[in-house]
Length: 382
Image (cartoon, rainbow, N blue to C red; front, side, top):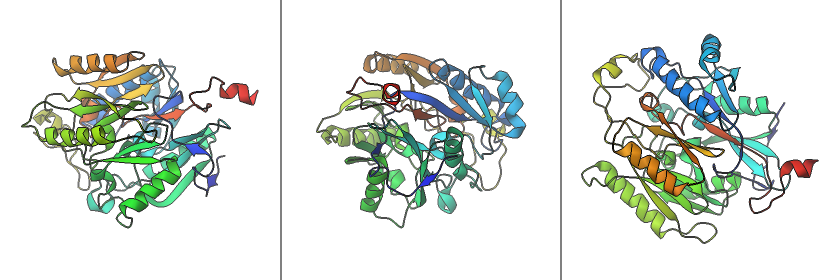
């Protein structure tokens, strides 16, 4: 069993590592909501399977699956994938799962259980109820026997934060300051909470994220830390696109910023795909139910290549059958991350559900000593 802790992770010597640091494994949740994914969620399940099987070639992957879908998932997922039965309400483990933190001295890994309210609660949440999703983080920590910190009244999704592992966090004002998250707290109080739980010295606030992002513009759809001091930023050269001003302001903010270690950022622009609109067939394939965000014909999707997942030695990259910008994204990441294998996965069906590859994955870091040290944790424990 894991136990709930009442201290601040910072006081206990724990920090949030960068996604590019070594992983023990990765978590996902099987999609099946027919009011979010079309055609009984079968196309989405095929896309999730492609992501899971790709990740499993580089690190252990665990898929959480409902009782009714367990046999289906076990049959089509790679045998390397661990499948565990769990009750959930949707399939976005980045936001419902724990944020893991590590202690570089003891090599211990712990979890953080934020409150989850379906991206907006009763203000503008995307579905109701969400009580089972709010239990996912604690359940994962129990499965892994990881102690965890649990906040009683602080709403946060994992996709709303990006850390460099060295004291810097990047967020968006559009999301963290939205009335549907923590309206009882000031910006300074939100910063203090994040600093105490993630062990931070510096928080950089981008004004906004990706145009029409239904998560109130999570940072992980517009930006990705790929190393300390290095980020990729979703971009467009089309000045008539509403995204242009949003990305430009983010670029200006990052260009003027200094991280916790006093570094200027190296910024790689990652051009977004051509606008992706929901087709009539795609809209009609979704069950339209009261209380769940609708999927209407012609709705523009918040498509971004920055919503990738960094596995051990690989980048699992969403692509959209865009002849021009898919290739540009792959080549940009090959230049920015030459030590990684770039693995493109067709991700339109994930996008139609409201997110992408980073949103459906959550890394579990490997306990290790500080990155500049050679000694590994298993040497410490032996």
